[in-house]
Image 1 (tube, rainbow, N blue to C red):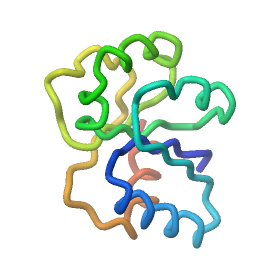
Image 2 (image 1 turned 90 degrees about the horizontal axis):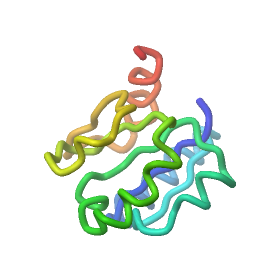
Image 3 (image 1 turned 45 degrees about the horizontal axis):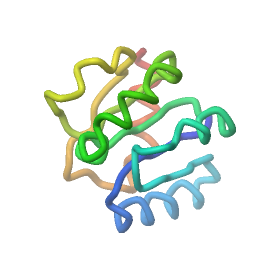
Image 4 (image 1 turned 135 degrees about the vertical axis):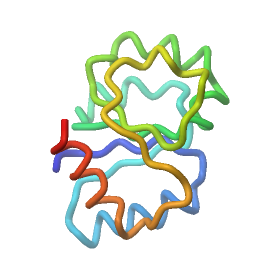
Length: 114
């Protein structure tokens, strides 16, 4: 699996996920906001963006403004939100609560199925 860019304001959960991915030697990068992140996408070139919908909605207009330049990338959404129907390349969804130790396997399954 290539780099996973995880966007989620829940820093406790993402901190644990970082440890899980690091232990499995899988590339993982996390940021706590969906505002002003597109430069990271250009620099890091992730295979997939995992986006917490609540985090995106907190800065919805800023996210929408950046989305056009990254809409070609696959997205996996954390939980469903009706305010994000414009995201075109959604490959799957993860619902909370989830087991952080199972997330790498879940992401692999979603990406392989698409």
